Image (cartoon, rainbow, N blue to C red; front, side, top):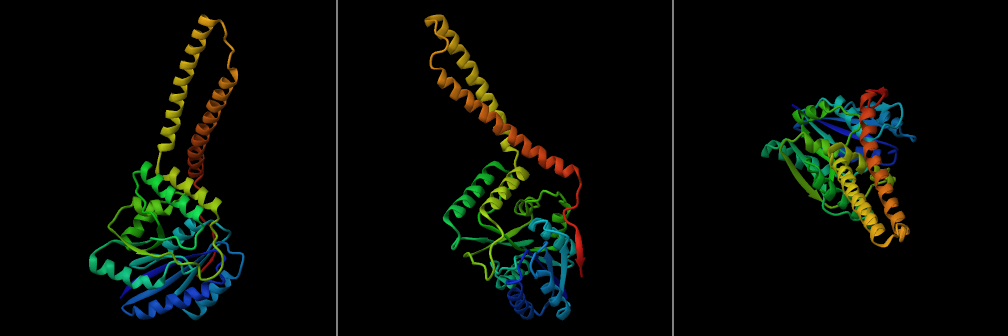
Length: 308
């Protein structure tokens, strides 16, 4: 009998977890031809998420849990779940039911019948999200697909079903600064996309604020594109050119009219612009340098405090 591993990162999901377990076990009971295991990764939750996971483990041997020593982030939680998984197929999904468990049979049969290596999901609508957040998300996908060789589907979710071969390929990418959506695309393999309308959380509140999503988008751009570095070099060249032109203009004005300081406020504005652009370019370089620095430390992506 083939085995399917369900990986569920959990951070303060005490309200969602019982409802999720009820729904996912319904799917498991329907798919009698396959063995299931549920891996709950407690990412340093401050509520009773871990206690609930332990209770589920006691009454259902298919449930396993990993508990981190602190909050390491969803990316680390997914990686830990992938490491622990033993299934021929692996599903990554959230506990808030924004990833409908009812799609798992469809995903499984798409791989078995159509020969795909992965079946991934994407939202075709963002109903329930603030307009600004939705607009920024679309701009991010448009931007990263323009500047990166790794193409990321607009509206892609982390919810997907993968063959073991693809999971093993992802585990080989052990960088600590992870942008999983990009990693899923980078490893390749044949992917089928399932589209569905946005589903709101069944309980609790989102852990992703606008600021966290903004920082996450920067991580994605830095991880899968060097275009910002090239842009910094282009800025430097352009402003060097502008500076040379301005020097020539000032010299000519001095020789012709003998006035070297007229309209100095405009020059101050130009110098301020150049200085600001230099700081921007230094910031871009610093971002890449910081990521490199963190990678060289070889710190673990997570520390496990308890598991079963």
